[in-house]
Length: 308
Image 1 (cartoon, rainbow, N blue to C red):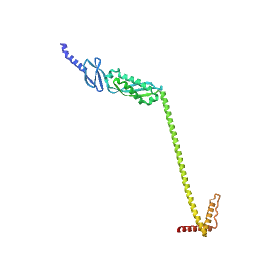
Image 2: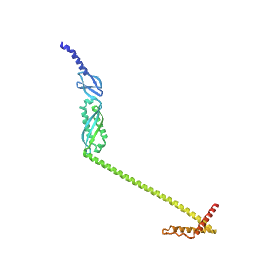
Image 3: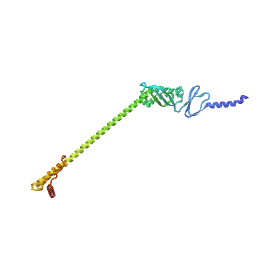
Image 4: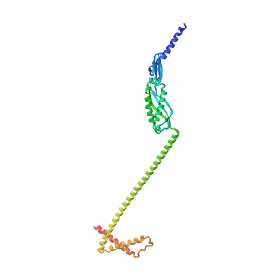
């Protein structure tokens, strides 16, 4: 009787155990592999699923979301025998739960070691300057190699990034000196170019000024020659008029020539640098008469021109 009293309880407990083993709730972003007597049979997707209790069990619980694996730092020798310290991060996503669970043992560790070896290979095939300046190229080459290698594992490598590439301290100091020398060189070149441009602009300015000055002298000479030509023409006309008047017996014409020489001589006497005193002729009436003769001659010429 005692066993009969506990039988319902045993059946209830057994039913609960069966239900718990038969019903599986898979969270979003996860997939479970199912094994039957140790052999893979199917994959449970997110949601509520059922398996055969005691005959089937959950083998691996695979995370199908994108994950980040940190690659530890390591010393790598470049092509030109320089030592650099490199570390990286790799982003992976499982796309096939069965392959990720059964094609490789310890997926994360396998990918980590795969990245370590390929970082040494890629960085070791490049010079130090290329390693430090072509990080994107390194990332692309690593991504292509590692993604292809993880295909049989049902895993997609979405990207890989080199976090740091650190050369030794002595190489860093040498690089800093080199960069300083390059900056000073560029500064000297810029100063030299500036001085050169300044001298060119100065020479062009002087050339332009000389051209302008020559053109000014040319214009002044042309105007001066034109003035002298007009003065000569006026003098010739005046001489012709006076000569005609002399031929007619006009006394004023004779006075014109005398006054012209008189005024010219008096002007030269006044401009002499050694002349301290200028003697004015006593017979100013003669000078006045001469000027009067000139005025009369000019009036006669003006009237003649008016009649013409």
